[in-house]
Image (cartoon, rainbow, N blue to C red; front, side, top):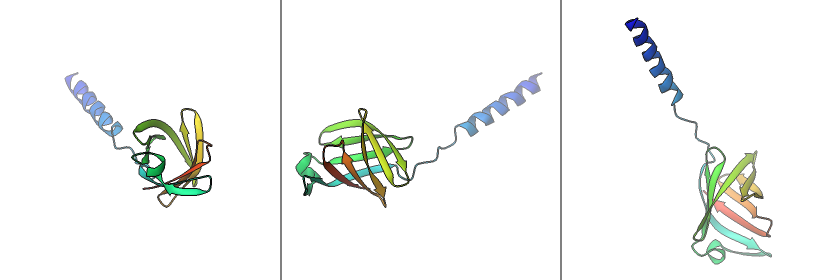
Length: 117
């Protein structure tokens, strides 16, 4: 009986170790730094739009954080090919993610932001 329990305990430990294996990292995950924005046909550095700049962090699992100046907001994101959708407080922003560059129209405000990884 003791052998059976010992073997069972060893098997359970092995299964537990296998279940805790590393999760595959999304190749698109990372921090993208805002470089410039376009509004009403005028292109300008993001520092002119948001004091302190802006960034977009994409995390594995479709979660992320956008920083606009001194404010951070949780976002959800999805990627279909090169089409990127970022959802902030229930509102979607649509853009592209290609070669480490995100171009996105921010919250249908006519503000287009560009981020680079």
